[in-house]
Image (cartoon, rainbow, N blue to C red; front, side, top):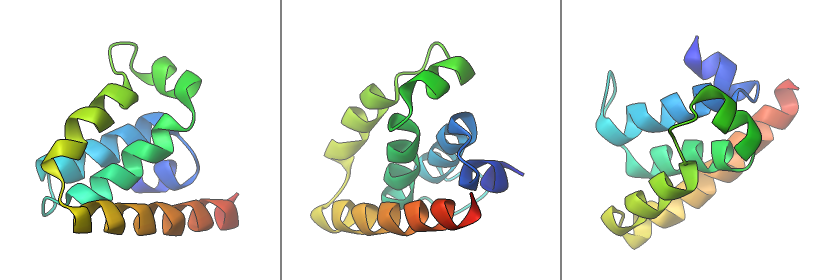
Length: 91
């Protein structure tokens, strides 16, 4: 359900997907994938704040970046482009 909602542009679901991949909850930990989902949510800050008033996605991203390798960052940017395309196609 969360993936489907996230792909439909639900910022809260995008934050949840980012958390899942960051922490390895129910999936293998993948910081690049996490970065992409968080970036999607960060692109719509009003919606993200409505979901979680105590969460600042920008802060999460700043805390995540130092833990990422250059390859993670590159793959995260690539994955973000793929997700944006998929979201555009679904909406």
